Image (cartoon, rainbow, N blue to C red; front, side, top):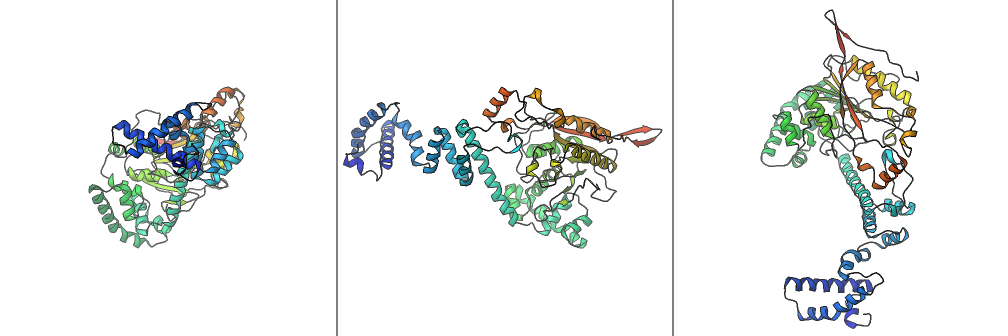
Length: 507
């Protein structure tokens, strides 16, 4: 059709002319099918070219419907950048893979260049060395798109982090949050570097603030808008909104199903509770622990608070919570007090006296995500040192607990399974949940429940699963919440704590 004057004037380039002509003819075809009126010029154009176009596509080496080409193929040339097209040709990608790669390029030019230069997609976390690297064209379009979507989510979280870094809650908001969690005034004063009398002055003001938030909610305002209006964290608003509710009603209002069995599987974290953090747990998991093993206004102790999921969930469920972590984030997380659990000199972070009703302990897992934590994290300890740390800490926790105190310890098996047939794994390189349970019992805790909290299988791509099956590699998705109670025995009317010395095999 290159000699037709009417065709040549449709657009400046061959690509533009093909796109414009096919689009126009398809539009006329749709109008005709609907019975709509078509102009004489349009009707003449349709009859002039449609048979010629159909003949061209019919006589291609691989016959193709021209409407399918317009909808699914032409986009690869018109809407996808030339560098993506070149990468597609270089790595022999199909249409679905190319479109997914274009999405990756939009998400991050840097990651796109890295992926196309190396010819493979990097995977984060414990599965990075699970299998030999796959070539880019061995990943399905869906897998490339999933990688791009994860990158988009990461970008959004980074943007939110930038906003959070620029935002600092007011002293009044911080006092409201910390008093709501039952943190003593003396510690609030020390944490915020203010006088205790200042805290007392804020108490009536905070009640006025809570009343306004509740009134706005009843008037139809949503939680995020209320939090934004009063410049307070969303969990604090939830605390106010749910304060008169029962635990069952709280689950319903949060749209969380209440599990009545010992398998607590959740597809994803609830982003309303807790910050983006390595190893972040679902707030639903923390809420179930509170439901079954605490009562309202009980004190929960979180020794390694991380992103603050437990504290946020305690707010929503009217529990007190004292939290500690390595990082000092006074601006956005004043309720999490900075504290180092020094393996060489373990100490309790608060004065003796007030003892917790529940210790929720979700530590960094052995080796699994060591690269994501700060240097010196226990995740990077040797196996012997890692287990000794828990032995000492479990004993210290028992010492500062009361007979009714419960411990909820969340961890998972660690096995050196990457790329190895299950039968060839060396058990000396692993730590099973069974070992933590033994440690707890030897340090004075009586195990009462073992609750399965499995991880998602979505971390394993289809290609990974296929290769694992060929190698007979057995992956890990099991995670266990161990519930223990301070172990005491009755002897002639006197309560005696059960403390059994523990020695590791290496010791």
